[in-house]
Structure formats: C-alpha cells, structure tokens
Image (cartoon, rainbow, N blue to C red):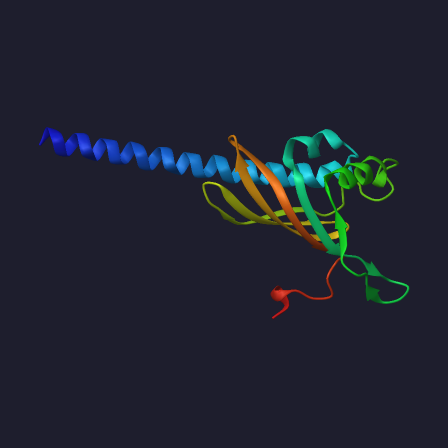
Length: 153
C-alpha cells in the first residue's frame, strides 16, 4: 500500500512538473517571438541579441506593389537583421502601438518549436531551438502580407 501511494505521488509530481515545464516553454517561445517583432518596431537590437541565434537563416519574399509581383528569394543573416532593425522604424513611421503584433504557437517540444508571427511587414514562420535552457529563433521564412491564406478555405 505504501509503495502504491509513493508511486502515485511520484507520478503526480512528475506530471505536474512536466506540465509546468511545458507551459514555461510555451511562454518563453512567445517571448522570443515578441522580441523579434519588437526588435523592428522599437528599433531595439538588444531584443534580437537575446532571442535570435547568430546562425539565423532568414529568407523571404517582398511584394513590389508597383509591379504587382513578389521579389526573388531574399536572404538575411543575423548581421543584416541587426543592421536593418537599427534603421527600419527608428523614426516610428513604419510601426506604432496599433500595428499588428501577433504570435501563434504551432508546436513546442522539449528542444524545438514552430511559431507564426504577424506584423506590419507580413508574416514570418519561425523555427526555434532550446539551447542552454533558452529559446532562440534559428530559421525564418517570411513574405509580405499574403493575398490569401489557408484560413480563407
């Protein structure tokens, strides 16, 4: 009887701790994604330094409204992300408090996560990894605001 109670208690404790860890990981992934948005919105590169991995691979497509077509694939490694963030909204003319700032978490595992960011520039799909207990963005696939999405079907 004592062994059964002890095993039940250990199982309950492990399950509770696991659920708490999962919730903490989800919140940490969201925080990394919000840091990414605010890196540009606030022109604050310290946010990228804490949430974007130096090995970042960011690739995407910009809609040229004059031509009505998307650019060819654009690449942005970490150093170029920092350089862009320093100037992109420095004067506050591209984004403000009313600009879109959404994070949608698709999956969080113990070492990897997938999320979607919606911001004034469009959408970013992100892969994150947990390194030394910290969630870092390692891959970003982005595009200008889409004409349609799967939600339209």
